[in-house]
Image (tube, rainbow, N blue to C red; front, side, top):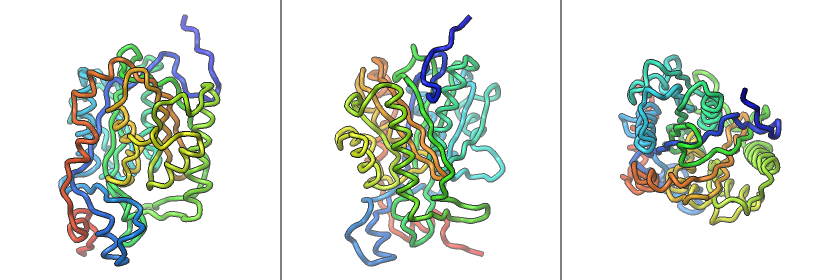
Length: 359
């Protein structure tokens, strides 16, 4: 008979230890400079929130990008895809209103038919939501491996502030037994409230945001509460972590919340990608973690905290194992995707993103 572990009742901690067996990222090659958006809408080139953002090509969407990230995760894990008991995709820009993204991804990587598929939605934390669920299915013994993906394409009304920062990309993670993992997930904690800071009703093309709620009580409260509760339950502080990854809607928010929690600029540097690829929504914390794992060393401890409007945060305490070194080089690294860029102008961006109504 298995004896349940004793831990804080608020922590999400499976009975069987789990971790990350494989991970992978994907970022489209096209880049729209922030100064190009400003040229069209304001004529100003100073005080811009980011340098540039990633834009999907005409033949790219959440499905194709998820497949690329999933294949990278499989390369690192080197497992049989038929052993995946779940393939879950978190996004707020699924290509179909009625047709799952997950089944197409599962088919493309060879995981069908004996697997569980589902699409997750929770704004920008849909990806980490899928990770928590994957921890549960593996940690309960229902499956040996489960895949969680966070991926999004750019959404932003023409001329809106989101046009500067709404990027594209994300990450995929294969969750499996601790003894096979390149990084152990020690525990997770989720903090959720009904906070109306960001929304998009059915049939609306672009999301709306309640400007005055965006920072407080949305982003800062939820990330701070999730991180603080997790660290208090684990008996840790900022100094116990080598790296920290926070959701990055812009460059200022993650730097500010990091400082409030006691983390330095150096601790968050590897995962702070928003200035070059934009806010990847459901993929933001996911891809920030891939970039951090790309450079992490055995023994490094990582704090990851996502944020999703509506609103909620998932926090993870992760410890890197000695298996990370070999697996880092098995697939394309996040910074390699970022370096692989083709600059486009605003007119090309409008065509690629279908912003011109033709009927």
